[in-house]
Image 1 (cartoon, rainbow, N blue to C red):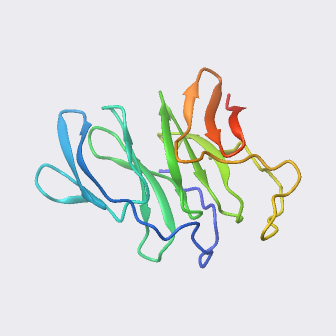
Image 2 (image 1 turned 135 degrees about the vertical axis):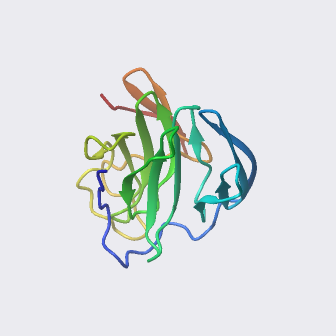
Length: 175
């Protein structure tokens, strides 16, 4: 398992608003139940607690953002055997998108929202695709700032990630 530390302990979260949903998520032959801020196995056992944003699943993989015991945001993916892989810790990950064997997400480990991509199996470190090396200045966007998704998530489209921002349509090449 590859753990990519994206922020130092004590960094302020991007949002304190928890996700609350219901319904089911399919992972292999198992139907998992979403119960407010949790994802439960068919046995009732909690797999994820304290969701930040909706999870994503393609039937083979489930990915969800929650919180560690010390308050850091965390992004994990599970395969059909329920083997977890942690892709990121810190920066309050959210706005998840699955694209085959890859996951994209938004996180703010430096105070500015950035888009990341990594293979779901954790075999490579996460790569930052937007707002690299920009300095966070409270109250203003630095030159070159790329706005994150607004009320929608990212979507894989061939070699690009696409989304709608407050400034209109955006895209970035991910491979």
